[in-house]
Picture 1 (cartoon, rainbow, N blue to C red):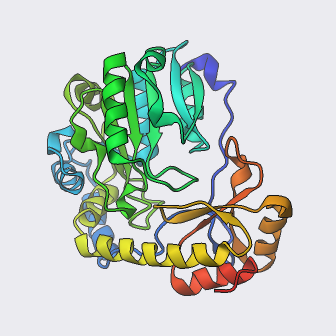
Picture 2 (cartoon, rainbow, N blue to C red):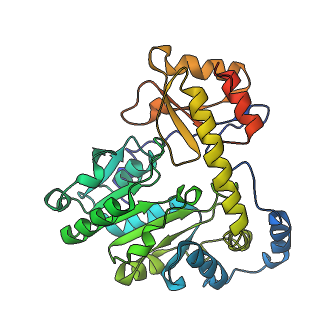
Length: 342
């Protein structure tokens, strides 16, 4: 991290509603957690009186099984964002350029700037078409799939072809798969390229954003560098044990994917009566509210006890809000609050 850059970079706004009386649709986390998680967390208390095993063999094995890779390619991190920062610290030096999609997760550009590098913004719809010559000027490229906040997952073939071009250009590719677990799509960890890092977050799919558990997947010398650079005891014992347990809950994942797909389709149909709603493979929907103004839609929702995400804070969006996909009853309350009865 570049000390001079720290003084010029601001924090990034995110979803998440602290008022427990407000129904929170601003954060895209699963409203359910796997059965048995509380018991695993409680059982980790006594073990937390000692340092965790820094090798994290069970956590690595569970993560590797989940994304279908060898366990020695898994680097444990306290959340997906920690995997993103670790990768950028390895890939970027002051003065470098990094290809960053927009509209997308605001932390990418912030983390690039913290390294003293410069984000080169490309519209998310155009990103995977970037050629080798343009990539050669970038030390790093970032892909978010499904993209946040638009919701569409990258086409696997197009992503793999883009990854190959990154390799030809000598560009490290970071693929953020924070929401890919909500889909049936395979991880880019399966590509096997030694210049690709995959960042994964457990906390969204398993409804535990405060746990801070995630991991990176990499190969070859890049994997070795990330493993060496990661912080010692990078996961607390509760996070490691709960994470290992959750990653093996296949039926929970299947049921979540089915519920989210069903509710997302129903919500999109209702919201489309008033707004332009982007197609989505994720547990959220991006709505262009047009002349109604995002601030007015946000206020109306809050007056009705519901918090939604102001998406105008994303680069390139000026009349948008984002809503999460939750349980049916909660989703109906959201739709009523926005004047889109189901």
